[in-house]
Length: 354
Image (tube, rainbow, N blue to C red; front, side, top):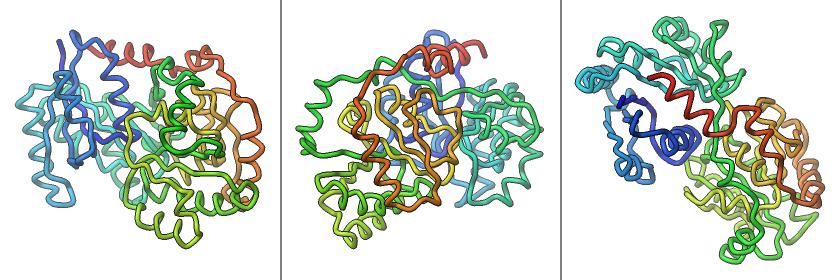
């Protein structure tokens, strides 16, 4: 059995965390085990599940606190654990320092995995990109755009954010149960799953909701996730008189069931790598209304409708109404397999590294 080490910011239920756990839950753990170096220990995380599956967690000093301690601690974990395969999941090339620590610790295989297409600190990203490319033995990306963003003109492999397709199959019974439990019966339900961060554009979603209420009074919006934007979202919801219609659900582990309860999935991000939540929403037969900056790689089915962020909130609201009128139907799961979104394909990619 081989232990692979994953270096992450946190292992909370978010894009990267969900991606890694999807692989971990489905991989043959008699052959491959996952361990984790974690920079941020959040109260809501996958820690207990990781431990129950035999994984180990190492918490290191954040770079913002002490870059030197962070570097030394990563090196020591790699060296002491004799890890030969190390992954660094990221959206910025400054993690080259982590891969250098892994190399000095003895890791022969060092894989960067790009999960986004931008970062607030573009200058530092470009500065560290050559170093990152020199230290990688393989380069992974969740989409073509994400690969070009992290590695520039260097070659990389697109590794799709795969899921267990059956987990998200539409079920009318589950839909009714969740809508009853969450007080959504009779309402037009618009949903979003993602961390409450500026890039996700929640404040614009509230503007859309304010317009949607004028067109369809009985509607509600679900925000599944948590983050630094929570207070701003609460304040703007109140100022728009939407506090009874916008439901902040926090971090949830039952997102497959929540997708069943929605009528339209809204995703007007300013940039993304490859949003796995959109793949899950399509798998459940849910219409997706998304910004046109999101990679085409995620458009698995005809359920994805794109709009410009330059379009006004009223136009977005009217499109939501149009999509909500369409009959919900189960998609062809062969489309997901053909595009590499079946978790069985993803697992094989990891097992072949051994």
